[in-house]
Image 1 (spheres, rainbow, N blue to C red):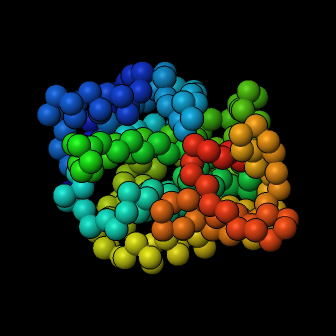
Image 2: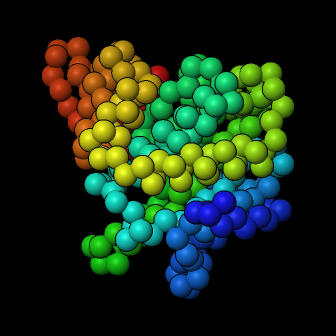
Length: 243
């Protein structure tokens, strides 16, 4: 693969943390990938832990330098990665795949994949991003995570994890090189958005409320309309889905 350079390891705490340390040491190159067969301290949004069984799932991170990309916004990369994962799951015939803002991937309302993007700055200038992806491939036991599922459970098929990785990286590369405008990419992201035009339950400042999902705006904020017809926009850390 021309774009990505894969470094495979048996086990690690967090691929995101390891790549960040390499970046701080000046050792990372655009397109470097760290793929772990077992990740013991995976990170998710809101400091959540991403727990997976060893050798059954896909856990990896990659680095992109922003001077190598034509991105209209920091959320542009989020959209591209989420769309690439969705397209890959469609290729493997996983049913009813949607994107749950900001970048979880669901199949029939159950979480298959989480993404954590950590942006790296020099002063106020965005230099690069580390993209961490945890995709449930062949795991079947989610007794402690009842809203999670895997490609195997959704399809009944046993997958080759390396084939899933290669297919996903090829799709990420294709979308990064496509150079579509942010407006076009965001429109595609919104068209595949979980809960769009549906009433959902949210929590903000400890209070739960119902609202319909309008979409995601150019800033990457989730736009809602409440039961009184009032629109509002929300950043990631100030609102959470209840369902």
